Image (cartoon, rainbow, N blue to C red; front, side):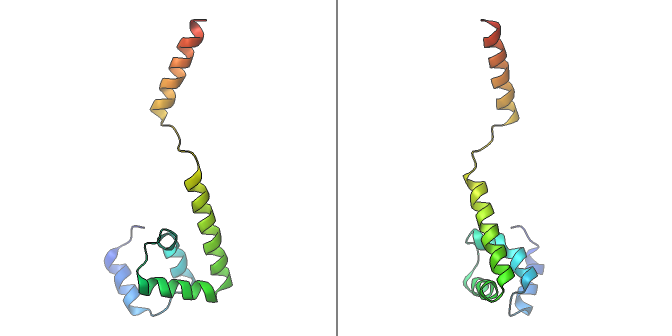
Length: 93
């Protein structure tokens, strides 16, 4: 997740705990296993103590996993080529 590195670092240094907004901002990093140990502990502590955030993370993770399982879409150029080939083959019948 792209962030302003220095702003994020300064904010994280000043806060000892995650709040609901922090959790939502960092949920993608959590689901992608991109959090370092200290941040991970803060994230999971808040998630486990806050039922709303626990539900948010479960829903977010399920959504991401579902999206990752979707078949990749063909590009517009590939689609155009397939349509042209289909039209050409239909014309030869």
